[in-house]
Amino acid sequence: MSTICETFFKGVKVKRLDDEGNSVNVYNKPVVVQLEEYDPKGMLVKITEKSEQKEFIVRKGGGNLLRVGRKGIFVKLPTESLLLTFASDEDSNQFTDAVMKIKADKSASVSSDCEFYGHLENQQHLMQDFTRTSAYQKAILDNPIDFSGKVILDVGAGSGILSFFAQQSGAKRVYAVEASSIAVHAAKLVAANNVDDVIKVLSGKIEEIQLPEQVDVIISEPMGYMLLNERMLETFLHAKKFLKPGGKMFPSRGELYVAPFTDEALYMEQFNQAKFWATQDFHGVNLSSLRNPAMTEYFSHPIVDTIDINICTAKTQRHIIDFQTALKKDLHRIEIPLEFHMLHSGTVHGLAFWWEVALIGSNVTVMLSTAPTLEWPGTNWEQVRCLLSEPIFAKEGQLLTGRVLMVANAKESYDVTITVQIEGTNTVSTNTLDLSSPIYRSESSEREAFSSAPFQKFFSSSPIYRSRQMQTDWTWLGPVGVWVAGAGCIAAAVLLGLLNAGWLGK
Image (cartoon, rainbow, N blue to C red; front, side, top):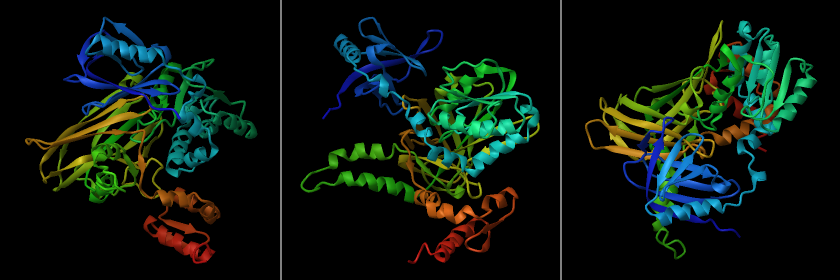
């Protein structure tokens, strides 16, 4: 059984270097750097300072490291360049020696995201997100001037559904680039639908493939939780190297919304999970020494669920990313200053996030939104909430300030540090969360039930989606034999349908 080897280096000074070689202190004091074995990719370096957590992988042989003097080590990362100055020669030598001894298995370095999206069932989940798929369909088909006779690049094409929409809108040629194994299935779909003269499926990463020509439009669905998770947006921006001057991007702009919220029940759920580790007599073992680490761990998980907009205690703030002009490096470190005027008194348990993207065409602009104000069925992204481990109480009319700091990490995600403070007081709270490790809380059992075979059978003969496309508030639930007015009645109708169909009560 292998053991995890961890080494801690105290008193390390960390500086960030810009493109011109200028340096600035990342932290206002020396910090602790943790080095941990991270097979198969290399060594995992962690800095868990609250103001800005960092986590990155050092590859075999230290190819992204350079010794600077006796105590300094320069680290070149995809997102930034850092200079680590260790407290002693011994520490810097030990750090370097550990990295040089890494034994990595390169054959096992396949991206987990590529593995996930290589499965048909996961592609089906995305394709059956009605809000998502219909938004792209409308944006592409209702803007034929942008697609007819044009060359299109579909980044992260998946099943190729967006490429099919582009072909249906009259595209001359579509390059569907997909890094996962789903590219094989996409090519089969293209051939089976007799559009292989238009759609060309290219297996590989956008950073590595070559195109025989520049393109007029780039289409993609690169959004993750909190807009930026999975860091696919960076790939989307990288693809602009193939875009003709003046070419269009779908989506064209992203907007991340944030608001403070109150939710005592959610907070206590996490708090009570960690409370177990305060037990002083668990079969004769005192666990309380792990209570604080448990609190840190449980509150480091963002919560993905569907929220009621009424839990928000102030109006939202918006952070805009213009995909037409943004660069990859702009997404490596994002700082959002906060200023909320409290609409009513209450405990602020954390910050809620959702996003919108604009698909801006020459004729029509379509907004794809994950806002909690959406009617059923919403989207698979839902909303994300980042809890404070120490909530604060704010009164109506008080000014709540702070920031959201998102720093790209080695897990194709972000370390998110939220800080809120009541202006004019010493009341402040901060927490750092790992966006790559969310808890899927809301209605997870319902989502599983709705995707199960009985429910698929249940809705298979119902024109439920057609009724929404006709923009009616009435929905026909076939096996139930009733019309349902509004989403609020659907749950009751489904229960009735299950009873009538014999799936319950037997």
